[in-house]
Image (cartoon, rainbow, N blue to C red; front, side):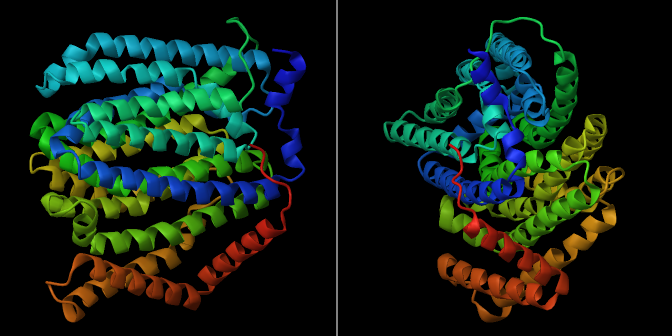
Length: 507
């Protein structure tokens, strides 16, 4: 690769001349496209649930829960290092590329060899072949990490969106066709291989950067150290998200795990996808203004408050209408998943806020504090899972929600704001309008179902009426509270500014 081409692929100085404009346009495009991706992924959940039994999803979840942890081992946090480091060189990125590729290949080999042991752990011999096929995904994704990071580094939001949604759509089509042909759980295996294959091809096609030959490069040690600290955080977060499924699969089997995993997918898919645009826009933006305390504090507080105003009322609505949601989306045979959906809705209220708090550590270069906070969060999560495991999947989901709202969120926000310009009081004050709206919505829907609607009310009309009531309640609360009016006014200014921005996003 020519030096001039490499420098062009890594350059970010041109972003500073219109950083706010790019952030606004990029945020709008990313959030809009991510909403489309959420719809696509929820459609995937709904379509495949009606085609395959719970045991098929449980079988795949046994391997996927472990793979979710190894995914961060493969990445080693080196994508975050590439995005954050303003003066990264071609030689450094090349070295990071080969590290990611080698680790991805190593994980694939280890999984292939360890597959029988994983099958023995779950007492399901089919897990052996499933694990060995899914190991190929690490081989492909290890070759994708740095190209994906470079696209995000240059704020090429449209490019990453096209690859992301394209992979999900291709995976859905492949899974549906195979499920229709009677392939059973193999349809889900193929789906999980198609997605990283599309990401590999798409990222290499859209990012013209190519790695140099493997060799040592100055400064890689510091980037690697930063990446390892991020990896520690990501692994603890992945274990927090996966330990429940691993232990439920071990203790209760594939059928129960299938119900638990699908209910989790229905609620936590939007949550996990929400973190993507928040980090894609927030991390490069906050990293560039980390030395400007007032500007940094104002930017993060706006992001956090607007996020809370969306997720808390939505979670309250879903928790109060969980049975209707399951009947509409999954069908009557999945009715046992309704209590799980209600508890996961409660978890969906706090998880995006914890994820957003992680931006404070990354953009302020506080990786070791982030590791410590991740370990504290993991301990609380494991405590909740162990407390509920003996009573079944619903008890686990309930314990996770209660511990999350009562301990994980307040402790996580306190740890994230111990240093830096953003204070705990800022974030607690930002939660007041959203929390008020969520409580009013929950009470309104409970009253609606108890005193207005009948127990025989069909799910779809009842859910639509609940959505209208929730929207009206939220609008009233946000109109009454001065702080939320200011936040809505800020959103209006962003929309106005977006309309005035003429340059198109680079793809």
